[in-house]
Each structure stands twice: as C-alpha cells, then as structure tokens.
Length: 283
Ligand SMILES: [Zn+2]
Image (cartoon, rainbow, N blue to C red; front, side):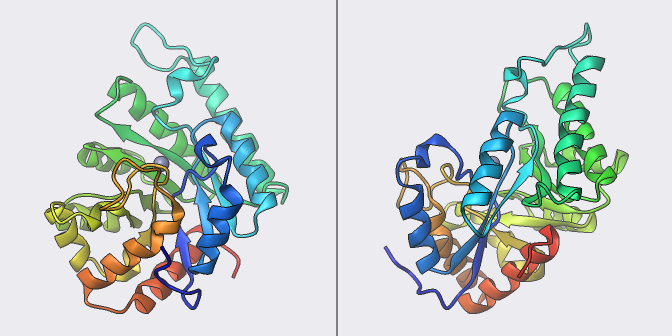
C-alpha cells in the first residue's frame, strides 16, 4: 500500500520500532516509510536496557530519535525494583531511577547521546496490575527529571486523564510534552493543552465508532497535534490483528485531514513543525 509519494514530510512521534517484532524487516519497512515521506520517528523509552537498543538504532538510521523512560508496564520487571511496606517504590529504587535517567540525560547534554529528545514514556494506566499510587510516584520521578534537564515528557494515559491532570497540578511539567494516543473529550484535550501539552493522534481516529475522539480531533487546532502510530500496537481500521507499522502513518494523516476539513499537506506541514519544535529536532 502506497498512499502518498514523498512530497510530504511526516514524523511518527511514537513508534516502538526497536521491538523484536521488527527485527527481520526493519530496513525494508523504513525504506517504504521514507518513500511515503515518513522520515522522522521517535522511539519511546520503556526500560533502561531498551534505551541502549534505541540509541543504537538512532545511530544506524538517520531520522530516528528516542526517549528515556520507564513505562509503568515495565517497572516491576526491573531486577532492582523494590517496594516498601506501603507498596511504594523504596528509597533505593527511587534513587536508582533518578540516577539512571539522570545519567542518560547528562549524556545528551554532553552531546554523546544527542538522539535522546524526551523523558518517557511514563504515566498511568488503570488496565494494569501495578498499583496506581506506585505509578503516580514513578510519574513524579520522571517529571522531576524532565524539569531538571529541560526536557519534554511523553505521557501514557489509559483511563487516567483526571489523575494525570492532578499530578500535573501538584508538580507542573515545565517543558510540556505530549499525551500519546490521546482519546477523550474536547474539554479534556483543552485541559492538557493548558498545561503546555500536545496531543498524539493515533490509529483510533480511523475507526468510525471512536466518535468522541474523532469529534475532539475535528475541533482541536492542528498546532496542538502530533501524528503517531504506536506501532506495533494500535492497528488502523482494516488492519486489526496485524502488526501495526509506521508505514500506516499517512492513513492517520489522511483521516485527520478529513476530520479537520484541510489538506493532507497542511496536516503534514503543521504536525511536523510541532514535532520539531517540541522535541528540538534538527531540520
Ligand atoms: Zn508506547
């Protein structure tokens, strides 16, 4: 499937392209992306060991960037993760997280890890077993480091928009970020925008039944939006059950253009500019 030629320029702002599911054909998939104008991609962080894989891919493929973060799904799998009697991360674990993130972000400031452009993905998720209080504590540590290193955040929020807003109120992120794969009302979208955040537009909008999210994205000004696939998850409509891929980013751009009543060219131009500005990507 080839929707567009490369006269457009797209950024996939959230793509787990480092995952093993892409190991066999990553170069071919990326070549196809580039033929369609998808020529920048951001790999979110999920665990400290994985940051290294992401950093290596960034050296190998021009146009790749990554973020350093511990995804709430992955925290309990860290061999150094320990909790106290209240079920929260113990003092040593908290220090460990600050140290790991701090070292990674210091490398960036020294120029050695210049591909690291954000802190995340981090956030809250009500569909996983990890206690919410522990997830909130982990999010707080990420926000602290993002503020300290003048870096935007990549936020994962599943059925927790109000809880995320409460965390932002308590500890405001100073350098903005993105609510990845945003789904929700216009009113909720506006609250995140008021905190200096952009909203990640993913494959959800390609489904007719996602009426609320489609209505929201028909109204939020383009200047607050980023495009993302969240590949290999979140397949676009018609591709359910298949591995999602950054190759489908143009499908999302086309749907957004229809919802907004603008040209795909405009969607490409504005969302790409937004991504470059938020993450400080070179032209
Ligand atoms: Zn993700």
